[in-house]
Length: 246
Image 1 (cartoon, rainbow, N blue to C red):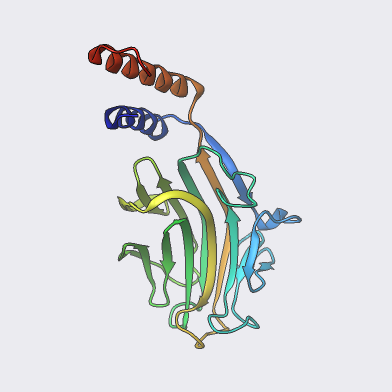
Image 2: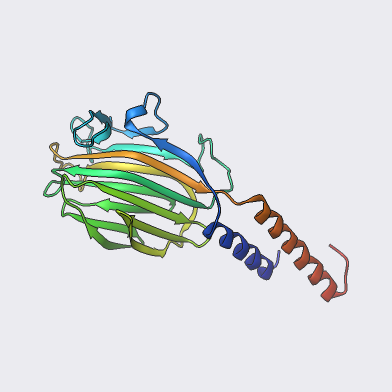
C-alpha cells in the first residue's frame, strides 16, 4: 500500500473517530455493585469503603497497610487489548477513561497515586503527595492541584489515530498533547504505593469509584467509505502506470 493511500485511509478513519463515532462501554466498575469485579488485582488488596466514608456510595479504597515491600502497592488492572482480555484484537483506536477520586492524608505522606495507561509505553496521571496533579508522558507536566478530602472527577482520552492524550479535571481540559509512543492500549492500571522504595505512609488513603472505560467504534458506513477510497486509489494508480498487473 502506498504512503499516499495509507495517509488517505488514516485521515478518513481519524475524522470518523474524532466526530460522531459511538462509544462502546468496555468496563463500568461501581463499588456498590462489585459482586464479581471485572478488574485484576496486581498487588495488595484494594478494599471497599462503606457508603458515607467518604463518598455517599461505596467506593474502592486504596491503602498500603500490610502490603509487601518495596513499594507496598495496592494496584488493580483492567485488560483492554491484551492477552486474556475479552477485547484483545478488537479494532478500537480511541478510548475514554473516567472516574471519581478523593484522597485522604495523601498530601505530606510518602505515597503516590497513579493512573497508568499501558499503550505500550506507559503514560500516567499522578496525584502526588505535594498536592500536584502531574501528567507523565515523555516529560512531567503539572496540570493542576488536588486537596485532601476534595472529590474530583477525572477524564482521560487516548486517541491512537491522532496519537494524542488529553486530561480533564472536573470537566475542564487541562492537558492535550502528543503521545507518539501510543500504538495499542493494552491495559489501564490504578496504583497506590510508596513514592520511593521502603518508605511508606500507611495512614494515607485514596478512594475511587464509578470507573468507566469506553472505546469509540468506527461506523460501518465509514469502513465502507474507506474501502471505496482504497479501491479508487488502487485503480487510479494502475491506470496511471498503464498496467493492470496486481
